[in-house]
Image (tube, rainbow, N blue to C red):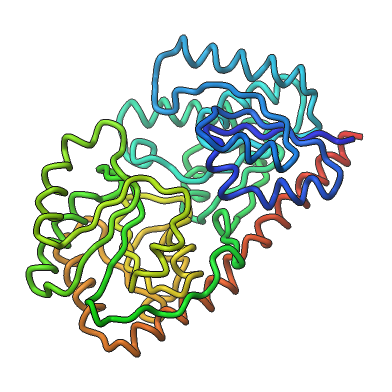
Length: 373
């Protein structure tokens, strides 16, 4: 039996966005091993037939001792599992899992799900991250990207060898059965916008809150649901603002939920002011639910809908443009908003079906397992 080892920085991402891949691997007779921390989804992964190797990871920490320990854990587990192919997601698994896999002479398939602002910006942090990526991706059998801008950046910046094999995926794709088209809600009680994100600077939260304050002052019938809670360390920065907006009736605030589909169903549009993305899962999900999207005009968002047909984009660094774009949507007729939602569903169904992603992964996994024989 062929063995696939998946290394990731959280179990939720594997279950929510890659469980169909696990099902496909199981149906093809692969033994599936996963190295991940336990954040509450390991039992569901076990139910899918995976073997779990729970390993803690400091996702944002820069302590070299912790990273050395992580690398050693990866090397030990790779020796124990002896996989035929390794899949890595997110930076630390890509870097340390990639190096460990290369030293064990096992094909590694890495997926770049997005790049941080530090990587895209400048300074010493960018240089460090570039060298880390270069080490982790050296010798990779294939590097998957979720948008072309990230692929071009990593190629031109020297993070990939010149002969590296790359492939472009439509993000993680969306399960069109889980996220089916839902009838557009009534507007008798006003327009409900939705933001699905943890409040933090990298998600554009300050502009999001300033936007709804201004829009609600112009149109009191427009409100915003925020689902996702606070990013670690950000509660103090945003809580007073949130409490004020809740008191004004402009915002409804909900902490993390395991199933966001009821919120998509009750909203009239998704607002997504993120600063950077690989390929936004929430934008794909909202479109699949037949909801218009209003997003930052950045790679990883703009590809998911047809501008003016399935949604609108606004300049990522402009609060004024964000406000005016939202007002443009608000001032449309109900029929226009509903048609925009239908257009969003049709486009994402044609281009972002998760089965497209699974097919690409399975072809590359089988090819590399065949070459290992």
